Amino acid sequence: MRVVVGALAMLATLGAGLFALWLVLGPDGELTGRPAASQEDPEATPRVGNIPSASAGSESASTSQTEPAATRSQSGDTTLLADLRLPPPVEPSPVLSSPSGPSLDRQALRGALRPLLKDPDLRRHTGLLVRDLGRDEDVLRAGAKGPFTSASSLKLLTATAALSELGDDHRFETSVVQARSRPARRPTLALIGGGDPLLASTPAAAELRGYPRGATLAALAADSARELRADGVRQIRLGYDAGMFTGLAEARTWESGYVPDGVVSPVSALQVDGGAFGSGADPARAAANAFGQALTASGVRITGGEPVKLRVPSGSEEIAVGRGAALEDVVEHIVQVSDNEGAEILLRHVGLATGRAGSFAGGAAGARAVLDELGVPVTDLTMDDGSGLSRSNRVGLDSLLAVLTLGADADHPDLRVITTGLPVAGFTGSLRPRFMDAVSTSGRGLVRAKTGTLQQVHALAGTVVTRDGTLLGFAALTDRVRLRDNLDARQQIDQLAAALAACGCTG
Image (tube, rainbow, N blue to C red; front, side, top):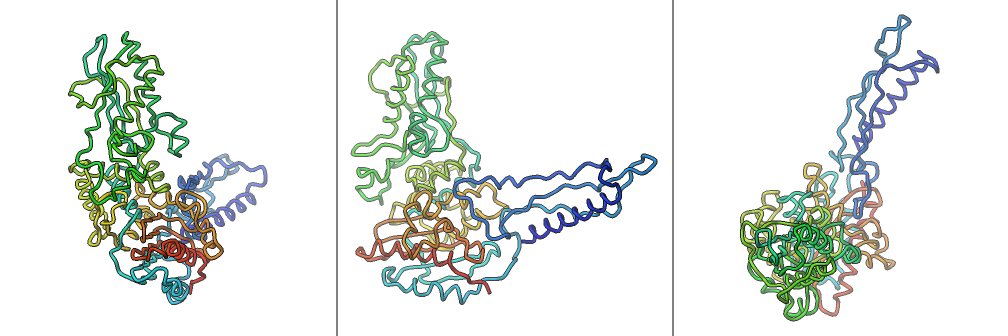
């Protein structure tokens, strides 16, 4: 709010000064000083999941770098117009940088939510934490203390660790190497997985899955074929290397039906179009086969039968590389649609980036260390995977609010997508079909949150703008719902968030 007020004061002063200048020079007078230069807020470009403005207080004011205006005297010399004294420029802030506006009436807020928290559909183990993001203070804590079964809300912590350790502009690479030195009549070509969770077979497949623009096997094949033709090579043997990650491809605590039923693919550093499913699923082999088909379509003949699994020797020559989408776009996709494979791959990258193994255990240990360094409470945190599919995962309300607060903090621009990339209630991602009934419709477009759903477990963590224009962060979890109340409990969680949006709770 102070940023906006300062900007308005600046504009008022500028207007008064220019009017005074017009009086001195007349309508045909000439300014010899440099005009004020305005810099647009780079965050103003809308994108899926941007946090809506919290009244005027959450908007970033444009700043002006202004020099004193000047006028020309009768002798032709340039002199400063002493009357025009502008305030110094103010650095913009993407969120409220200091407490402003009326504070929340905590009793009114509690009163608005109490009937919902007592609803029998939620049962005994339900918790809610609400934070005023502008003031960075908790305004309501109700229900059980936790920790709770996280479900997919855990993806927020996995994504935060990956962004912090790798950077929001990091890109994963898939490469093609020639395992034998040139020239060779029939070299072995190997497709090497670099852990790109959004590698697509074709641009059309990427568009169908809603992927941001990134690498495709079709482009890799075309580039590889071009290089081979330049060397006079028309036929090859094909192999693949997915050895970047180690350990189990499926968590021991996952339910046995997850992979066969298409809930999640076995985790691999080489997968295409979201992985592979069903009994005996092998994402890396499936990706290699798809690459072979693309090579054939590009005029390269493949001999020797099916692609073979191998370890590429050092000194192999890279002939093509596909760079994936920027990590911030990868994270936004994962959070929007609750991409299980993507979250598991990110967890392994965190393990490798922190000097550990690219495995379930290495990734979990690395993520915990990174989150702890960021100031996220980890006492109640248990990570058996990165997606939240395991029922052994545990998370505290404070941990979820901590990563949301970091995402709204100007000091952590690499984490901004944690808040801007959240699904929008009733419009995008996993929240598109929700907040449609009469009792939760007040949250449509105002609630932006990561969902979490397992049988008898529901989670919702994100941001909401109240009726008074206050930007709140919240986390609501329940994990002991009776089976018959499962859908009703999810609706009650939605109503809690909608009640925050509808609350006129300022004092």
